[in-house]
Image 1 (tube, rainbow, N blue to C red):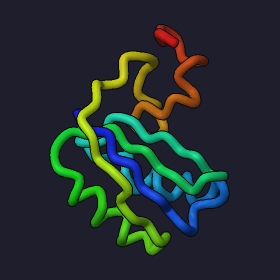
Image 2 (image 1 turned 60 degrees about the horizontal axis):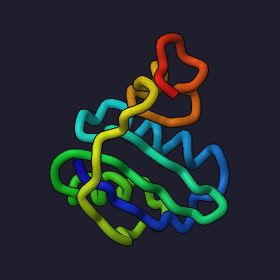
Image 3 (image 1 turned 90 degrees about the horizontal axis):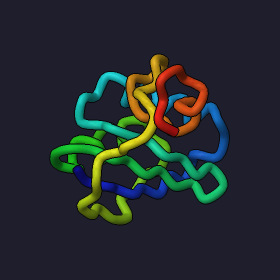
Image 4 (image 1 turned 180 degrees about the vertical axis):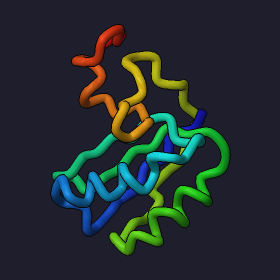
Length: 100
């Protein structure tokens, strides 16, 4: 598992967050997305190389740039969000059987 941090210059509201969530919703390499809208930062926990994620973000034309990629551990809380199929960390606490 890897943790990649991206600066996303044009990500400043929930509309861009939703666009990114939808863009990665079917990607089996993406385990979790963490958004910092105020800081315009996206953190992705993923398997495999970061290059496909970087290319996918570039296609959204939101001014994204990779900041760093480091080894990480898999998310251990919650469940995959039924709407996005990734660990979103936002709605898992309200889901039946969640660990958070």
